[in-house]
Structures are given as structure tokens and as C-alpha cells.
Image 1 (cartoon, one colour):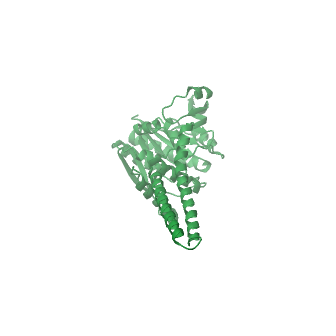
Image 2 (cartoon, rainbow, N blue to C red; image 1 turned 45 degrees about the horizontal axis):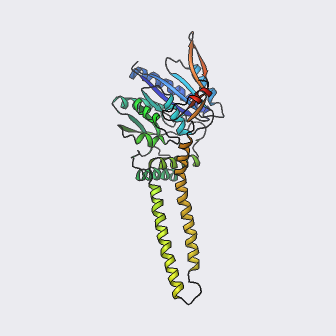
Image 3 (cartoon, rainbow, N blue to C red; image 1 turned 90 degrees about the vertical axis):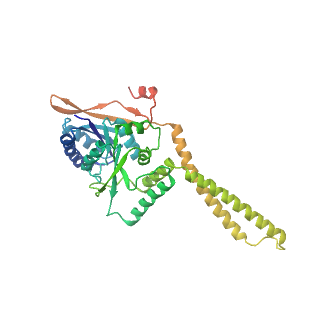
Length: 350
């Protein structure tokens, strides 16, 4: 074989999608073997699903011939979030090229063959550019506004309409895994590396089974992580706006003092205006504090230095006398970056 391809599949309550997804991945693995002479493995991350996702993954590991497609399963002790789930996959992937695809099959697995061909042409990063004609206008407008906003604010150029459907060279994966970031925004981190990359446009399908796990709160958190991870412009703008407010307040004080001194009335006119200005200033200051709070929260999470994930179950395929079985591994504590944690390794039974 000329190498190994790793395909990361993060999953959360996707029991209805696992079997059809692995059927397509198995067919893809055969094509990769025939056309590129490469082996394929799947790194399936169960993000603490509450349905039968883990059981379905085990069934696929038992059903599939490891000589065609190797299946490795990791179940987390709690829901660590979508971005961290992908990052764990990067840590666990062994391939020369590492791809990531969602379990809902909205991104076509078959396109990974074209990604691999571009990788062999010398591209370090190959990503999918979504084309979604069925998207409603408010969602499309919000998504376009986010990508344009973060590109204007950030020093890094992020590709428009690109999600997490991508393929990375092994060297890129090693760099990403070496970074110490407890709140990763991988789209921006990978794009900011500045390596040779290319986008491939494709039609994104509708979800076959289940419901999207990305509600408004998750999308909002992703947007905040994307902005705070790649630019400090909001902090600088809040400082500038604060200075403007101080200057405006100083001018107003001088105006009202002058009116009070020169007027025969006991109180200057415009008391309601002053009250409204005070309320507006308080609201603005609260908003500025909120912006600073997002950055402070990121610092706090970094200082806490919590593990990236606690892997409750690690399940591997094994072959005994031609029969495929699955076996479990001890609890594992996984950290971001290149950190040695012997104390926690002992707790994990290593």
C-alpha cells in the first residue's frame, strides 16, 4: 500500500445514519484501494450519545472486513462539543492524509476521492465549499454576514462558505495537534496556517435521518469562538468607543455646568435628555464589558488547562481465525498540545 487515509466521523445521536454512512465509506475505501493504492481507516468519535449510536458503530466494526476498512471507535465521557470532537480525531488519526466528514451524510463521502487526488498534486489542505440552493434567505444572509465579518476583522483570510468537510496532510495535522487551544475554532486555525490549499465546490444534501445538533446557541458559540480566536479588533473598538463616551460625557458636563451658571433657573433644561444619555451610556458600557468578558473567558479556560477529552471507551477491531471481534481499551485522558501528564495517565490506568 502507498499510504493510509484516516476519515474522522464525529457523531452525536446519529443511530439512523451510521449504517448507510458506513456502507458508503466501505465502497469509498474499495475505490481508494483500487485507484490510489491506499488503505483506509475510520476514526469514529461518539460524543456521549444517548441513543444507540455506540451500538451501531460496534455493529459496523464487527461487520466490515478490516482488510477493506479499519474501524476505530472512541466514546467520550461527556459531550465535549463538535470542534473538540474533531480535534480528538486528529490526535487519534494515523493516516498520511486525514479527512473529516459529518455523520449525517450531508457532505458526500465520495468527494473525498477528489480531495485525495488534489492532495497528491501537492495541496496540504483541501476543503469543500458548500453550495446550498435550498437554504432559506435569513439563514443564508446570517451565514454570509458571519464569513464577511470575520474576514474583515481577522488578520487571516478564511474561505467563504467552507465548513468542516476537509482533508489535511499529515504535517498539517501534526501542527494542529501541537497547538494548545481549549476552545478551538478549527476552520480558522487551519486556514490561518497559510499552507497550500484549495477549495472544491459541491452540492450539500439534506439530512437523511434525525435532526441537526447545531441550534442557535451552538451556532452563536461557534461565531464567538471564531471571532475571539482570530482577532482582537473588538477589544480595540471597545477601547476606542469607551474613549469617545468619556469625551462626550466631559463635553456634556461642561455644557450643563455652563448652562447652570449662566441661567436663572435652578436646574438646567434637558434633564430628561441627560437621564436618557446616562441610560444609553450604561447600556453601551455593559456591552463593552461583555465583549471583554468573552476574551477573559478564553483566558480563563486556557489557564484552567482542562483535558481535551476523557475517552471512556476505545474500541478496536481484531481478527481471530478469520472472525472479526471488537475489544475495549482503558480510560484515556487526552490533552491539547504536547503536554506530558504522567499523574493523569496513572489515574487512567496507563
